[in-house]
Image (cartoon, rainbow, N blue to C red; front, side):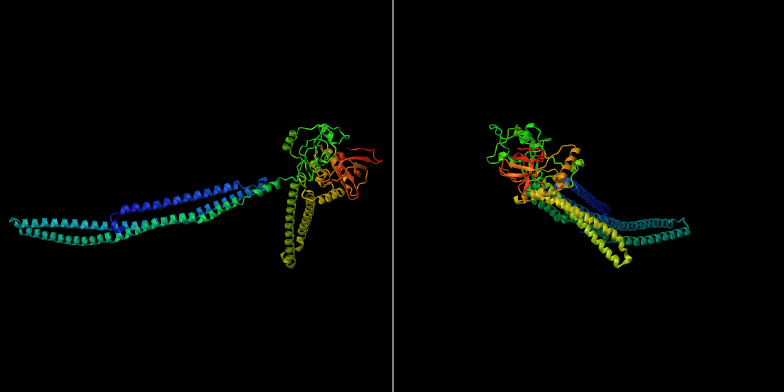
Length: 606
C-alpha cells in the first residue's frame, strides 16, 4: 500500500488532506491548551476556597480550631490545597509535554510538507515542459511533412507541364528535396524528443511522484502516530497524579477518622469550666415555728426582707457566684451549704419573704457572673494583668499560657545572648573582624531583658500557684493549710483576685463609683499589709455547728467559745481564732460576738 502507486494522480487531494491533518493537530493543541487553562483555573479556585475557610491568625476563630472535628476540617482544607497543586502539575505537564512539543512538531511538519509538495510541483513542471517540447516538435514535424508533400506535388505538376521551362522544373525539384529534408529532420527531432518525454514521463510516474508521495505518506503517518502518542501522554499526565490525589483523599479520610467526639467534649469542658461548684439545696423555710433568734442588720432574713441583698455565697472554689444573685444588694450571708438548716438538728432559719423558685431559676439561666476587681475598675474595665476577671479554671489556663510564652521569650533572649557572646569571643580572637566592646551594650541590654522576663515569669508563676492551690481538686488537708496560710500571710493589693474575694473564696460584685472603689481598695491594702497576727478584740460563742470546708473558713462546734480577731465588715463573715495555729472565718449569723471593754460596746451578731 503506497500513495505513490495508488494515488499517483491525486496530487491536489493529497495536498488538501495533509493540510487537514495539520489543522487537526493544531485543533488538538488548542484543546489541550484550554484544558490546561481549566486546570489552572480549577486549582486557583480550590486554593482560594481552601484559603477562604482557613482560620485567621491571632483571632478567636483560630482558638476554636482545637477540636478534633475542626482539626479534621483544617486537614481537609490542607489536603484540598495539595489536591489543587496536583491540578497545577497536570496543567504544567500538559503544557510542557504536549503543547510545547506538538507546537514545535507542527512547525517541522509544515516545513516538511512544504518541501515535499515543492518537489512534487517541480516534477510536475518538468514533465509539463517535456510535454510542451514534444508537442512543439510534433507540430513542426507535421508542418514540415505537409510542406514537403506540397513541394513534391508542385514539382510533379511542373515536371508534367510541357510549357514549364527546365529551370523552373529544376527549381521545383530542389525545393521539394529541401522540404523533404526538413521533414526528415523534424521527424528525427520529434522522435528524439518523444523518446526523451517517454523516459521523463516514466520517471515521473514511476520514480519521482512515488518517492514524493511516499515521503508525504510517511509524514502523514508520523503525524497520526504523534497525535496518538500525545493522547497517551494526555492520559498519563492525569494518571501520574492519581496516586497523589488518592493520598490527598486518603488524608481527608484519615482526618475524618481522627475525629474524637469524647475528646471534643473534654475540650469543651476545659474551655468553659469555671471551677465553681453548683449551688447547694435551697433550705426549707418552716413558717409554722416562731423566730428563735434576733435578726441583725447583716442577717439573711434582713437581707432578703429588704429586697436589696446581693446574695453571694462562698464555695470550695474561688470566684464562685451564687446563681440567684441580684445586682446592687448588700454583702452575702453564709454559704448555702453552711446554713443552719443544713446542720443536723439545727435551728430553723428565720421567716423571710422568698422569691418564686421559677423566677430565681430563670434569673440563674439568663444571668452571667460579672466579676470586677479594683484595679480593672480604676483602669476603666481593662483586662487585669493576672486575669482575675476570669473563673478559676480559665484563669489557670491563661496564666499557664502566659508562663509558657514568657519561657519561650526567655529562651529566645538566651539564645541571642549566647550568639552575642560567641561573636564577642570571635572579635576577641580576631580584632580585625570587629570591636568586642561594641557588643557590651547589646549584651547588657539582652541580659536586662532576660532578668525582666524572669521577674515577669515569677510573678505569673506565683499567681498560677495561687490559682492552682485554690482549685477544688485539692485535698481537704491542703485546703485547710492553704486557708491558714492565706489568713496569716494575705497577699497585698497587687493580687486583684484577693482584693475582691470574700473569705470563702467567692467573688463579690461591686457597682460603686470610682471614688468608692478606691476607698475599698485602700481598706483592703490596710487589711492585708500587716503580717503580724491580729490581736483578739473579743470573744464569741458558736450558736450552731459549722463545717468550714471552704478555703479560709474554720470549723466550729455549737457552744464552743473562740476569740474574735476581726469583726464583720459587712460581708456576713467574722474572723475568729481558736489557738495560735487555727483561725479563719465563720458566718456571723452562726456566732454570738462579745467585744472587749475598749470597744464601743458589746455587740451581738446572730
